[in-house]
Image 1 (cartoon, rainbow, N blue to C red):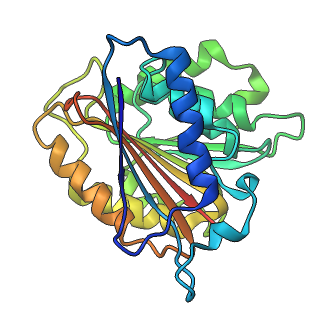
Image 2: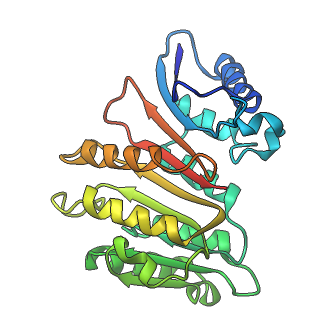
Image 3: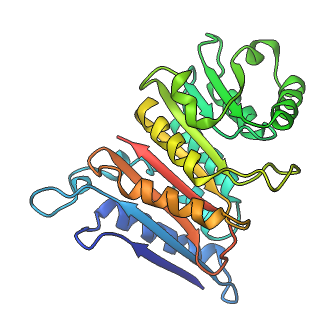
Length: 270
């Protein structure tokens, strides 16, 4: 059984595009979920309210939504067919264009960085991927992966930076970035005592907000199964909830009956 809970402000009027999205999820559930399976989803969204009490998206077609065309992708997460990181990559592909500038704010072992390079690389060599981490072990691991996975031209597009993501706006021009991606938690295979912190994550989100271009995306996969994980999740939620609805579309996907499952957060800048 699929249980879908919609979380929104009390003044929110649900738009036709969003209703269509939910209906498509419902249809997918009939095809993909057996009667004996249970998967609960908490979906939170912010949409702008016009003076007449309607959402601005009611005056647009579904194709104007940043999630337009992503119903099957998001449904695959709801029904357990794809991991949060896999869905995040597919959403990135929906947003990122060849030649774009993007940021991997938590480089880790380099798998997100590698995916980003493949998305932005083209013959013009205009794309750029900034990948940052405070751990040398992470940067060395990422460097090894990129060395064996990229061709010489693609390698030129990557900048590995030993720095905290809270200072990303010091190295990237304002309003020039299409995607900023975070995996919040600890380095897989590394020291689990070294984790991302709510304080620096908040600073990083503020920095990302300033350098993101219109039409860009801040993507977060928030891991909560370690000490401090839920506090960081609350920090992300509070930050997203305060973004102005006229300029941002903010979505949060959380499995209600799997409390330790990673949480997918997507913040689209209009």
